[in-house]
Length: 73
Image (cartoon, rainbow, N blue to C red):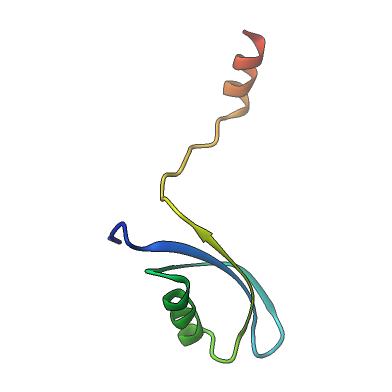
């Protein structure tokens, strides 16, 4: 869906009504493009924090049983 030139950005914002919204994930070629997309969805918001997440590989979280079996060995 997205090419390698796109990166995910995680935003923490304060809406114009004062509510805090955390972990808004937006794709963009750069932070400025991601901020533009964010500001189109949340008019008048204030960006509190932004974290860049490169790569899209998700590592599955092991179950308790899998971790326990590694410890017992």
